[in-house]
Image 1: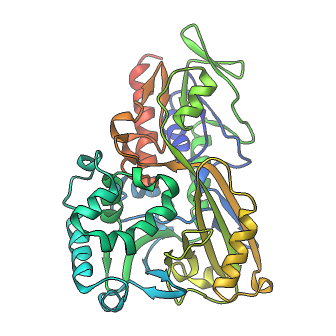
Image 2 (image 1 turned 180 degrees about the vertical axis):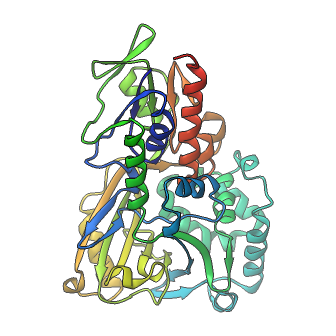
Image 3 (image 1 turned 120 degrees about the vertical axis):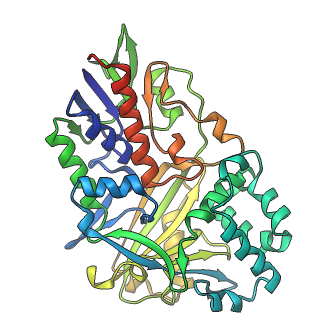
Length: 410
């Protein structure tokens, strides 16, 4: 059978890997290289992701795929420290002692927050789909914690849609980030970067017979008898990993949209650390980015020979005018960095970086098969109520499984 896969991110590459041994697979990717949000820059003699990434100990499907692709020997478990930037001051929030010293929550509020973190893994997150995160926090933790701790985080992540976000997303996010000890959160990373993982996925899919075509955006998908025409070429089956509304436009079909937001992530390099050893620094103060992610306070500095920092920003609709300049200027001013100290900087922009997990989203997620098309991606059930690399691996495999079940004799 001749299968078309639209989109060469993690989900599309996994589907190609699963289907290529038994079917003819053509994968179309609009960007120059596959990988999607797992794309990387080549800087001198090292690779660094365009968007910060790490994995978790519970990412079973992803870790098994590392084994299959023989990159598991690159996996290292590191500690991720956290902090909050408030009123121009960096407050570390990794150890119990640091949390106790944090001045912007009362002792009772800190106790409530700690108890919720402990409870989060036992809560049924999807059952909270109909409740907003704001309602849940106000009811369970009180207005002080919402105003001083959670509202700035929700605003930086979801902007004007923050009051639509469900408690399902919130609890899932807290639970997945609760694997921590006194030294920080236990997170996984591949020595040399996730570029090696993407390259092995691409290599193995091609070895099994898949044709992976970068610089090849799909412009039209049309039903033709029992099959499909993709930009005029005939296929028996189409797997789309694009956002459902984008697939609907390409195919002229009625597929329920999933709310998405864009991401603008700046990566830059310096000679020194500017976040006091903290990996993940959330911004409470108003800034053109919501977090400063100091990659080399997580991965060893000697891998790169320079300090690497990400500035994370989310947006809806159009990218704000002059965002690149304002992000860099604000960072330099706020962290006392001369522009001359910045070795290099790059800005990655994706208008469909991930779903906005609004209330009621669980019931609106598209099925793996809609109108004869197969759909899988960040909008699929394994990526609810929070997206992850592991969720995309599972979704890619599930889509391939359904293709094979739908065409058993092909």
